[in-house]
Length: 311
Length: 283
Image (cartoon, rainbow over all chains, first blue to last red; front, side):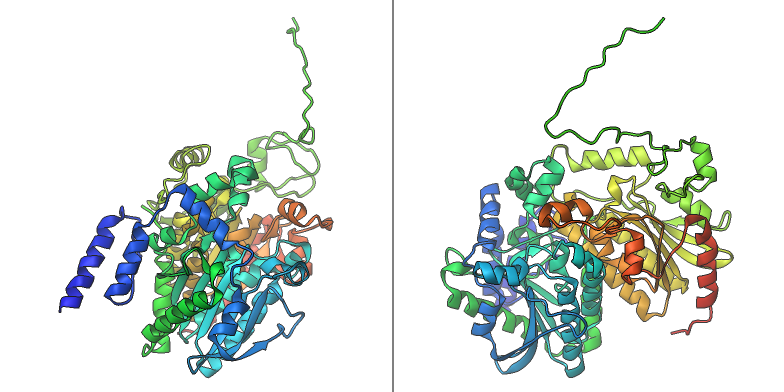
């Protein structure tokens, strides 16, 4: 069929475009025009300047946060508080809502808008209690067959004394493990900063999307610069070296799709940003429809177990 | 004849604490000094105060495994350089240097062995290879160790020692967290036991992934076990750190470990657990 040929053609152009083995594992889903959009993004500017611009946009103080999207995308939003053990972590919100009539469990990092809220929400850096809460609501999703949506936006898990005493590392590991066990459809989107373990803790999903100006990285540019360049001021150089931008994440097969933002960045138009995100989330869920729970889990694990480049 | 020598002291604004450059065989706790062969015979534990020196992966395997039982696997797996990463030096150069210095392909050694006649799969990390950092090769080898354990239905014994994910591989090193987690979940599903020994240091990405998912988790005395190490916590939060912050002893007190087991007792401890898990249910 003509559209198939077109799609094939684009796929071929896509794989020819990138130096192997970089494209290994990269999947570009969707019908032809979406593929074409992805292609455009792959060919977009990836200079060091463009990468740094992503870093700045991902952290823009007016960028929409999880609850800004929830408000615009979900009906009947009902936040569920607390980990049932110790605390309610403000940096990670969880709840139930309806996405186009379909009940979903939503998990997302939440930053604050003003100084007071920023402190309350620990600048979007969860304590272990946040991840325990996430696992608790995943259990609800599993019990009732609700899809799990994750919105990722954190500089990283909270690096403090109490967070360590309460088992930050183990909590992050167990949240990933819980996601690897789910037999319901799961979709994640990085909507700002995808900072290290604190981000991937809720990102072990069937489909991982990423907004075009978001970043996803193993360490902050400043942290990397401080360690490898021994100077946090070299953050720009570090970012250029480890390439946390969406295009490179797509190329490396770490994400499945790039979600468009309004011109100039998501902060320019929250409504439009939410519309575009919702559209991608719904499409991603539709694509997962029909697969059995066992298949979803098996494919999810196979996908993550295939990640990495080695000889 | 005494050599003419001038002692010059330079004052730095950020002077490192004095005398922190001790010989590696000098015990940092009690100052006792040992020859290599003395420490080797004592399993790299200070015979005076019990301080645990770092133990190389192959040495540890020799100590745990029944003589001649270890058969190494995935020897040829090497990290690639997907980003063409270059900080002050190219990543490929750092890799080559680490391999030359350590005689290892990467920061983990895997293979089958037996401990006290119980067949096991071993996955032992080595901190001397780029700080035990986890990149694609470490993730892949650990993942293969899980597969090998699953295939033969033999328990997996893993020893962790790592500074975390390997920054030079960028986002792909972060993806080794979910990768190894998924590998462990496959193991759990098949009712194959995983026993974890946390050695100094077990931090960041490795603690936040497979290291924390063992059925039984023990640690060596004094090992640093933390998602964020004391220096970074101090710098970021300016909090006052408790004296044993992040150490195995604190982790035991807060419920994150099953036990702290001194190195000389670990072999017998593992053998006991392997006996107990022998009567586990099948698939």
